[in-house]
Length: 531
Image (cartoon, rainbow, N blue to C red):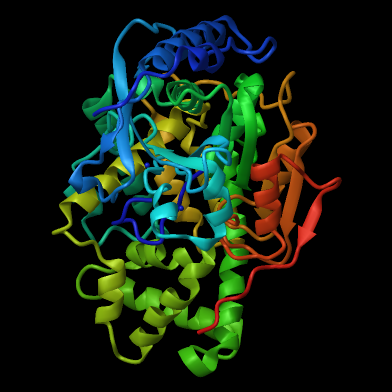
């Protein structure tokens, strides 16, 4: 699921070590469960994954201090796990995946193994996950006593054989064209950009592109499990990370110990990925209105109007002014959407976005330029941003078949834009390269329960914009024995890291004791931001 980032210039809505003991090796490798695969190609790849996992279990991970420029402080340690580029040829070309970990904070007796994390994307890095221990994030303190926290860069991301589709400085350059087309000529210009982007991906990353799929990332995850010496996987996935979890649970049901999925992609085959993005457009409009209501309720602070309509009028005024003359020469409508979408995405962005919005109408345009314009001097950040977008596009374009007739895109997005104008066209152009993708597109995995899958904990806010609530309901139906925690009247993306006295203890109880409630649970919302 598209990880729409509050600001696209940042990356995000990514030795000495003894060999694993022989007793663990035997437990760390298990054949894929019967019935978990379909099709001869996938069976070959699953057999390749078992071979790669056996190899990784023997090799282990040579942990050492992380490279200084990775921004991961001691005692976090880093290493690499080798995986096949193509699981159908497990002895062919290998790529290295960057992983990091920090040990559990409790006693040896309290330790329950490794908890592996993916933050979403596709294209997000999980390497910052162990920093929840070093920064003493209170929500995770209990779980950290029992688990090593493990993050990784998925294939193609960051330090794991990164892919690229365009020069990073060109990618971030602003201002870009207004995503909302005024004419057929505007649409033709965007189609040309989409074709060029797809061609650029092939020119710069042809070797990797056919293998940039969710099922391959899932197989990589199983190899990482084996390299860690873990017989079974403990996993936390957020956003697109929930789809990784859903596919892992389908392909490797007997390898799951505990799994928490938070803010859930609808895993139905027909939803992956064209329909998923159309669904986002609708959900974002709803959450955008929620934020505008909050801004209006806090007019004493922000002075942007006392009604949603008044706040929307200010947004349209800002948008029109930026279109006529980009603010600071660099912030046009495209850059505004990139920045403002943070508010419907995350409640933590409500105050910062409203503050910048308010400052603009109080005469301070520099705050908006600082927040929304690219920083051309931040070459490392720009490389990460371009890489993240490349992985997002590559995975979604290869995972599933996309409409190749522009008339389908034009019809669907024109219709949606009438009622859901905030994000529709911007989202369409971001995904349009998939209509012209240069490598074979695949069929999504049929996510369902197979023998051996334990209860999975599903956590979802009711008004999530990026992964609408229906996704959690769909996965809940497909994973028998799963439990759904619904955060009522809330919509922040990524629930498990927020303070909610109803939800946090239930997540702890599941990860620490394997216990789920006897029935699904509805929780009150977390606290609304207060300016």
